[in-house]
Length: 303
Image 1 (cartoon, rainbow, N blue to C red):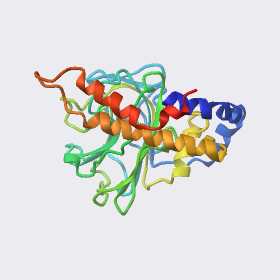
Image 2: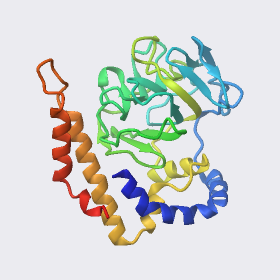
Image 3: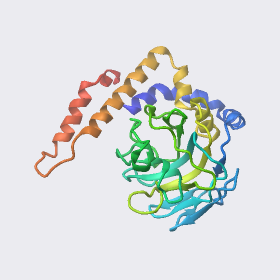
Image 4: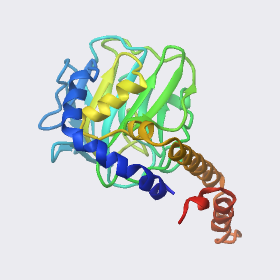
């Protein structure tokens, strides 16, 4: 189904990307700047402030990125200002799509008692979510299962608004649906650190990420969807899907919306299937998925 969406959008995307170089330069001039940023090209330094990182348990810089294999991680010096509303941003490439529970970027108290994090596959395999202490601010975005993060870096951002609204973004567009949680936690200046490749401290269990983080940033406000799109463009990520979608003919927009809706419904059905028991027919879950597929309309798009 994703291939059908690509067939609709890619011709227009290629035309738009003919001006990508100038678009990237323009985006870099317009993109917002955070309170802390890590490039990971050749050091763990905060290029904006003083929240410089320290590597632990074998985390290393390699090929202009922070590379961790499920044990290593990085923790920064304390942030120099308090932060309540916030946006976490990171470019992440995964070593495995089957890993569960690792954090890409996290803001937390030094003991890990309170934290907000961009986490992979903790509640549902393959999904990104806004991780938090005891799931206090965590709910599934319902976004698509990750399929491309082993091929190259994907751009991720999560925003935390003053009213408790939490929104996720992947490659410059909304990831699933926003939701409202409790009001955001205030992390106090000098009493909060940022970590990479770990959901929260202390290290261990299923908190660790296997992959590469090439860039990351923390903002002291909830960025808008437009600003997230600029960050994606500024990172050289190409033309965001929302820009391509906005230029599609109306009939193609409706077709893309229907397919995406059907994909979300299929993923929900897939996630709700009960695990196999010793007495379960192994073919039954796959039969159920096939039944669900045929119930949806996407087959009308096949030629």
